[in-house]
Image (cartoon, rainbow, N blue to C red):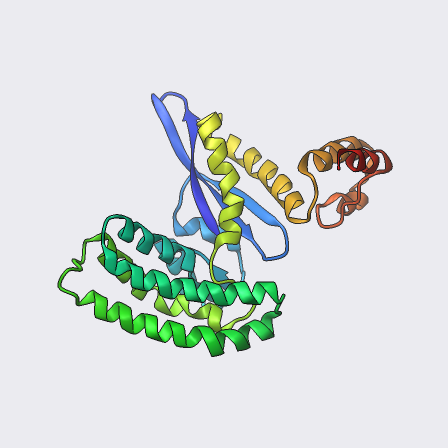
Length: 272
């Protein structure tokens, strides 16, 4: 799960307002976007309902607030966010960040091997317990040592990276025990990325209510992409078939079930 700010027109205020486009993704399935004018933990009550299970997210405090009220939720943190903070520290000249970055790279090397072998959840759990768990234990010791280093100030980029990582440590270890969980949140961040590109072009949406319609469109298009459909072909076929589709037949048009009509299939074959 992730969220991104989106500006919207707010007539009478003399400026734009700011809402949030939230995105949820179950690995291997659809992406769901939902628009909210705020970013508080109350949004999560609406988005997640009575969900119970593992929720992978960044370190935003609202997730912890929501999970504290719902004991059936286990939070898993994202190693990509951690890596980014150490990389930024290294870019500022704090060379001691190179050690944690190397260790994180070794964790990702294990994941690369698992992807290449197409390992299932049980195989991933076994491999991670054998290879990743010792790497994590060594990294935590190294971070505790660096935290007390004379040149690592608490408010420096490296100091902040270390504190961020150690504060999330139990959540960062979840992927080792649960083979169905990824090492990072990149799956949902990839779903958020098109909205970031869009914001550079259209700058804001037309109003607070417009965000709802945007969320619906993003949901349809990104879910189609997740199931391997060419978005334009899917939307075109969808709009042509909807007028003659009964309510009971709508399920066949969902991205997970969709099969192109004869004419659309022919045009897609020509395009390929």
